[in-house]
Image 1 (cartoon, helix red, strand yellow):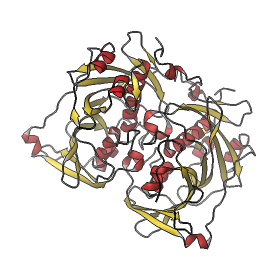
Image 2: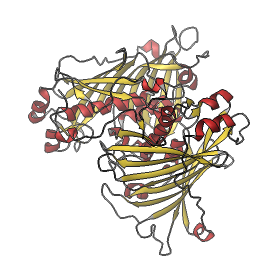
Image 3: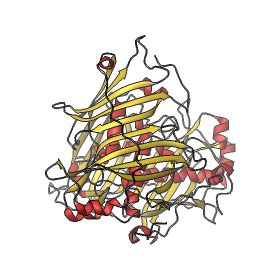
Image 4: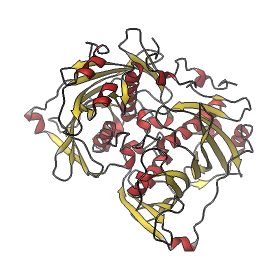
Length: 301
Length: 301
């Protein structure tokens, strides 16, 4: 007896599965259905879930092309040479529409070279039924020697195992700057005392990159989180957070000349995660928010 | 081009999909593959992930039998009558073996009656390849009037839409008590200042039941979390946590007569979540821990 009693539930054409390479040999594709616990209070999938799924496909891509060696993205040659790890340097994500519970999304991912020390991961998420593009994202990974904590050029062995799988078609990761005038018209919101939870550690014993995004959102004023949704996010990772770190999350909301938050229905924010002791920066970010497409929109004052 | 270059990755026989009812008409079955971000620092899937997947199958079960009406488990008749919600009263879970990254698990779930005011959800998780049982769990849901916050008998309409889908075969949810002698030999570990994050809210605007489990684990001493894994957990939910609540998590670790933690390699703990202001109890729990089956086992002193 298959699911026959609820037509809506049956109306799920796309396959779920373990993913596969497209015939161009560069793009890995995998479908996912949004689960009940992956959506937030506005019924839309959380940004953290989307980022987790991007990470998942990126690793499965390495597995599919046969170069995955271990952990969350080490290649076979990296494992042989030892002490080489990837560190996320920059991330850019733009969300056109948030899928909701039960939607099936199709994630495409491909990789490109980024100079001699990096690699660029690219993703699109589209609605698996309509092919509408929902999200585009790209990030830059740099290779680091885990012992010396210094950036490392790609060893030839790693370069040669990856080269044939890299494409030139990469999505841009744009560097963002704030002009001095902007700096004068912002309101600072702070959330103190963020401590990593045990469940924030990933299989490499590090606080996962995606958790930092959640911490950044902690200092976004409730009036924005309730009424607006993240349209785009740019992040620069500066240093790692340790299990014993206490983190301070800052969100600087742009205020326009008339004293109102938001301009043309968009809200601009700047973000920083800092260590409470010493104040050194873990991460810096920029975000743009637009009125929520799902749920009620209330006035924002 | 399918996943042909990595044999281990291809060695995934079970299907993923949207789940289906078994031919007995009572049991809903769905397979899931454990994703990279669902495992913890010891490579094993986190208990929160397992609990989330149980919740997911429970809702999909309602959809499959055609009685799902909305939210995270309301039936069609509950939606018509309005103001009726489910509240989790007790939960019991026993984990024999934690699946690891990439494992495919098969979850079976079925429901039974629990007196005139409740329903009992039951689950088993097994390894989809070997059929080895990994987890058994059951919980009791009570019906509540959301406006009066009082427990409610099942209206006849709800009873009759659910009755034919309920089985008598339910897993026991055992009430646990601590003897006075036990109370004298415990060490209290506290984690203060736990504040719900925005991402802790579910689609019903409530802190999801599963998040409470994470908070309970926050006060378990690191020496236990690092070296032991949760073998069983029993929880009693007493009241809801609000977005503005500040929560205190207590773990009381049993110490045996020789002053050592743990007896026959098992550690017994008692847990409480309390509001920092007023101290009223949100949740009470009991857990048993055993040495980790994956990763290194270090001495616990």
